[in-house]
Length: 522
Ligand code: AMP
Ligand code: MG
Image 1 (tube, protein in one colour):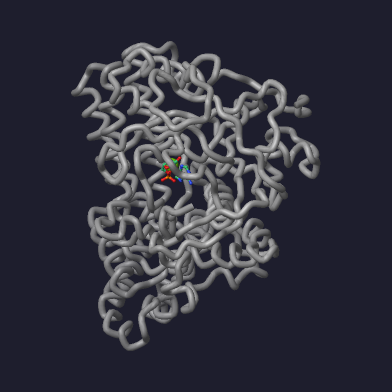
Image 2 (spheres, protein in one colour; image 1 turned 135 degrees about the vertical axis):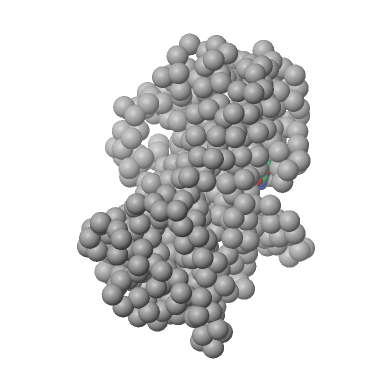
């Protein structure tokens, strides 16, 4: 024990919300409680792999090389004032109510007061909890690197996200069947210490609503409003409605960002929807390389492709509808809730159009804009063009020689040269139309390029890149991890030494597990 230096430990969550009275670590249904006290499992021989200096600074931790820091972020020790706990929540998984889920492999170790508000520190992969439902509560290096790199990358891309403080190895081996095909293998166990101003999810409310526990539903809503939405004022019916409205707005903006950068979450179950509109739970996510709205990286969802790229905005709306149902007992106003959900649709459509035009450097909307966008996305899909490369290179388009740009698109397409030629006809029409459109824009070419570069990232974490970092790290070489970590801190900047990451997915990655397909196994 002992006090961890510097940290100002708080206990608003555990003080203000009901605890599970049982404190043994056994699988169970936990009623009338928001969390269960549970200690992390002591890792055998923890080692620190990476630390996010920025988040350490937020916490004002000066020495991240210390044994004390490693003990903290690997779950080795509890410190004074800290009582670790796992949160109780439910959720709709792939469209069906799944009942109680909860933190099966996540344990909150501390709530820390900082100059930027209170942050919760949560260990992912620190052992079993009452919510582990027969699973091991562990995480492997592969999935932990993916979460660690991606959550930080998202933040730097300007997308609301949970953050990561550290990545460590437990020194233990964990058995995983990556493709659920009976070929299980041992992988290195790892723990990510992630951070957020709240880890409350839509499912945290759904579980109380499903159990008709309106007393605790209200307590959780009141706590979340006073802690994370204090500007809304004293909780009352009108404030609960505003609370829902703001969650809807934040979630809409989050998914709009995903569509802007080509991110596919992969598992948008309601238990993976943050009450703060943060991107959370990085599992089998992926990036659109060849532009395909029907694509999902998640093999577990291969049949229905519910969580495919093009469906993400509708899924957020569906998830918000579940939250509206759960908050209904506090609001009791169906038309008002419906108005918010309807507004999501109209606002999203407007914002999507503005966002897509901004990606094209067009700022004054015209009547035929929807058409211009639709033709573009259809061409991108048909010609299997890389989304990131296309939009970044579009900033170099010369409106006086529109057809010259065809060569760039051809280079950025995954089609064979002959197949591309068959699609060139439609591209020519679009390029000519786009050139005319730009000529009507008051923005000068140089300004346009700067503005376009600010919304079209140059570097994203393609699955094959994460895979390279994982392969090296598995051999104890963290240089690729470090290189990508640094690269992704400035995704919109031109980084001359890093041009190799501004390229199409290499052929070797096309059908490789971990590069083109992923499962929920982590
Ligand atoms: P996810 O889809 O990763 O957000 O996980 C869905 C649910 O399964 C959550 O309740 C997780 O806590 C739980 N879960 C996933 N993997 C494990 C694991 N290895 N051990 C225990 N629970 C897990
Ligand atoms: Mg989850």
